[in-house]
Length: 39
Image 1 (cartoon, rainbow, N blue to C red):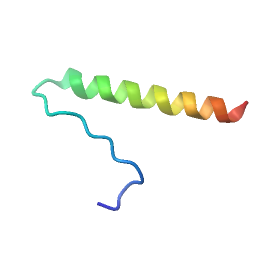
Image 2 (image 1 turned 120 degrees about the vertical axis):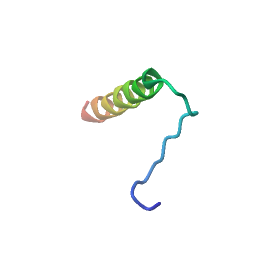
Image 3 (image 1 turned 135 degrees about the horizontal axis):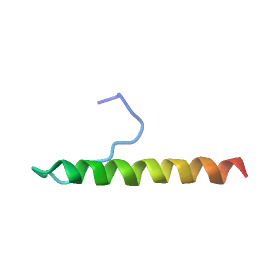
Image 4 (image 1 turned 135 degrees about the vertical axis):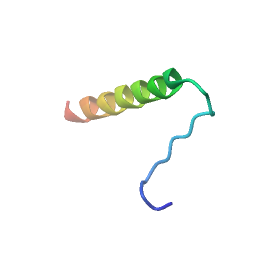
C-alpha cells in the first residue's frame, strides 16, 4: 500500500504465461500513452 498510484491486479494462475500476458499489455498501454502525449 502506498507504493504506487495505480495497482493492476490479475486473477491468480499457476502459469507464468498469465503474468507475461499482463506485463505485455501494461507495457504496450504505457508506450501508447507516452507516444500519444509526445505528438
